[in-house]
Amino acid sequence: MIRTLTFTTALMLTAGHVAAQGFTGATLGIDYSKTLDTDDLGGITYYGQAEFEAMAGVSFALDVTAYDFAIAGSDAQNLTGHAIYALDPYISLGAYFGRDWVDDDSIDTYGVQGAYDYGFGTAQAYAGLGGGAFDDIFIVGAAGNYGFAGGISAIGAVDRVSFDGGKGLNLELGGEYALENGPVFSGVLGRVSLEENGISNDEFYIGVNARIDLGLQGGTTFDRRGFFEAFRAAGN
Picture 1 (cartoon, rainbow, N blue to C red):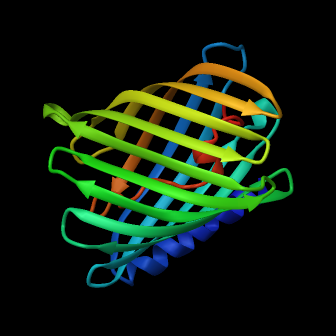
Picture 2 (tube, rainbow, N blue to C red; picture 1 turned 120 degrees about the horizontal axis):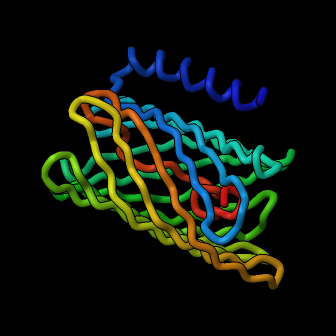
């Protein structure tokens, strides 16, 4: 709880700082996910993101995330920074570095990413490495959305992570609805396949999200990054 409050304070201070340094967009949101195969209560994720432009075409972003697994007996936190270069109004490239904290251990991940705005929606992909509490981490993933009329969009994502002693594959499909000048609500059906220390487990889950996108950009260029964003074992 202390660490979560510290992260929240850091986000507020950062948001206030970037407001004076070319603030372009931010997102505040909450996720809830629940497996369909077990009777657990699921997990809740709280997050905030802020992005600012340092100079023409060059931006920086900060993600602060708290995974509330207390109802499952644990929790985790993440802090991730992004460096972003916009090639043009449609294509952006970037690098990221993030750290997850869980049970007094830490996990570092870092990598490259790209995003493409094709008019009716956006697509993005990333690849990264990492280490710490888990060694030899390799992560790759992609996500996108396609907008229809009336603020309705189809969304999807895939993430693949491997590390010394385990691996995971996560697939999501769903939809979202954006209120005019208001919050965005979404729901997904996902399937996560996990293997750790020779034990395999496949589960289906549902997830719901509510978020607010702020700024002229309407949110940030890239999604959140980190070990628990890809390896969804603890949250489900």
